[in-house]
Length: 78
Image (cartoon, rainbow, N blue to C red; front, side):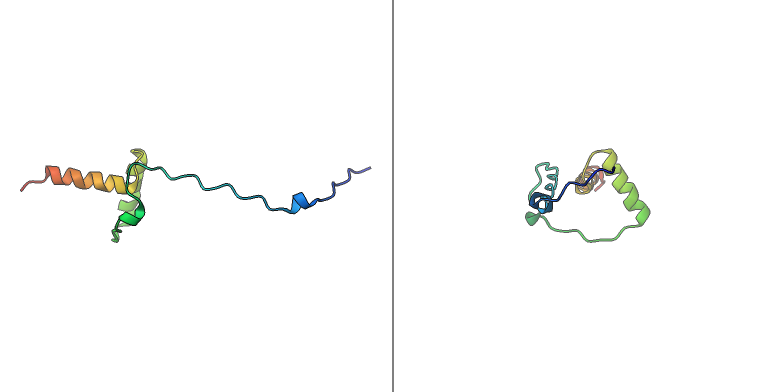
């Protein structure tokens, strides 16, 4: 003889809350309400390489951009 299915109860019909989103990594940057957007387009190959570099260095994209800009300011000739 086959196994009988268990009858459903009201508990089975109550939706379970979805787990909350994992908190974002914070590194002492101001809240996004205090930040301005930079909007510009770049070649897809550069974007892929830039994202890979940030990932390899365990950095956010904006952190890598800031570091690159600071380096340029300190090494450029007058």
